[in-house]
Length: 139
Ligand code: TYD
Image (cartoon, rainbow, N blue to C red):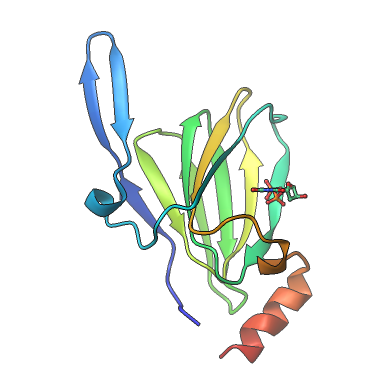
């Protein structure tokens, strides 16, 4: 299995007096995957937490296009990372093998997700002890 660490990538921007554009060009940003699916979380309750799963193969690139999210990532092997996303000019690469918990910190927050695969429920691990076991077995 590929073992990669999550990382923040700066997204290029064009700003002028009327507003801003953020541009995601996978090759320019050195994204470690090709994008097969785009989705976004919206209409989210402030203070709610989502996620509570890991993926076996899926890579994702998360962008807080509006609002603020606190992301907790855990590799099930003792490494835990916390990332605050509150700028549309950065994105977070979440490789496979990371349990994620996504807290919605502001009203009207929108999280854009670029994903390496189409939706596949078999790629999810939704039980934390199962995830730790899966990590142990895949060493
Ligand atoms: P899930 O990925 O668990 O959302 P979150 O991590 O934000 O809590 O997805 C929630 C539900 O939506 C789940 O039943 C699977 C379904 N779903 C799809 O059918 N297709 C998709 O592309 C996504 C992302 C989710």
